[in-house]
Length: 276
Picture 1 (cartoon, helix red, strand yellow):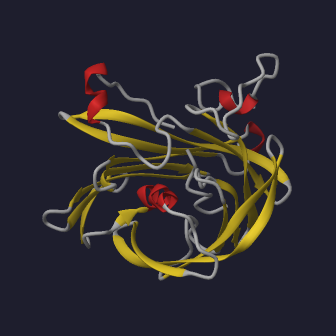
Picture 2 (cartoon, rainbow, N blue to C red; picture 1 turned 120 degrees about the vertical axis):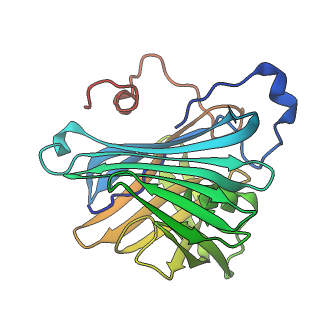
């Protein structure tokens, strides 16, 4: 499944209670957790989750966003996946400060850490699995894919609009166009029918979130603007990611209490337990 999806999603951090007043109010609730089921064709093959949390690093208040993807045990003999991608973001500018990627897919493992310096418009990337270092130029509004996906939740999509952005992928920056095509219903097992804007990205590099292929996103029309569904066509498969549950702060339509009598085997994949 080549570079699988990118993961979508959790992060932990330690935070002093006295710093709460320094945290700016964002357009999504910090502490939110999005849980997805991942399918290879019609077969469920794993789970992804995305979480956000405040962290304190070197006296700074930063937003941490982590995407995680784990495959089920049944996939181990063929193509086991254990991916974690994390960005630390300046909440005032919503620009990344640090990006770390640990990807374990099949027999291939990569580990990269990138630091962003917007004063010098330069990024430094440590490619740990190859023991090498890369430098590349930034523009004032360049974001990595993690911060970009959450930045896009800031305002509603207008059907018919096509907007251009600059994003970082690997060791370069690229042009990315976001096309809002139309509103379509997405059926979710825990939420029923959710009207969502169909988003089709076009990028000046090979694919978006996957190395080769095409990806499409559906984003809920409400103020949360949550990705409700994603599909990606790559040379060897058709991958789907479907939203299962939203956890965290809030008492709106999305946040539901877990049934204590209903276990969730997908949670075990992120808690260090054996994979189902």
